Length: 251
Image (cartoon, rainbow, N blue to C red; front, side):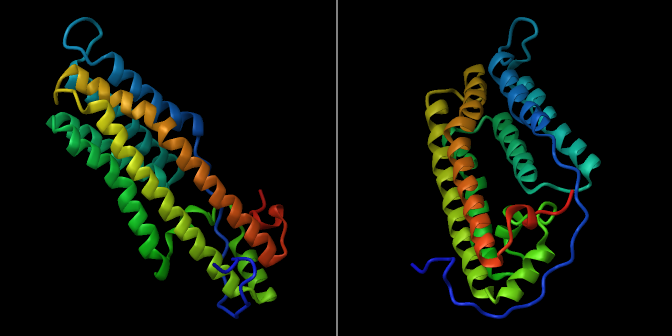
């Protein structure tokens, strides 16, 4: 395969205008309200008796309130939908809905795999469109000075190398999402295969699957995306001649 940094140059179009920076998301609040509190509720408050037990359905509803509330608050504060937050929001709604419907472990596992599968398809097939998702996920215009990057690409005549870098990054992100789908499926099967849908054990299994998912699924996915981002930055520096600080928007 041709090296992305050595592709022959080619002329291209001018870059987009610079956007005003958006207030960054609070990572601690994201982790606490989207992961930790819902997992604690699902694994510890799902019994039908005792105080403050909520029962299987009650604990699912209570666990859903935190990520839903966070997504609405985050949008109200930042006035912008974050793609990963939106995907997480939809995933939580599906998780709660299927849990309340007490469907089988197989159905739940396919739900867990469906979100990264859909995202993989969107990333791959959007590449030929006007707005490739790889640019949304890795070339964040709220952080990167895209006008300067596009200008540097035109100045150095490395448009073809830039397009090849985006294509190989698209393939890498697609593979990342496919791996996430496979791991999500088998993790859900592992924790729910022997549980009766609608029981306290089933609800606790959902909580355990969600908690372990951030280690078994989230960590490999994060490492692969970090590599994709590192590779993209390295490629941009070679293609444009700019340093890392020059690629970023001034703060």
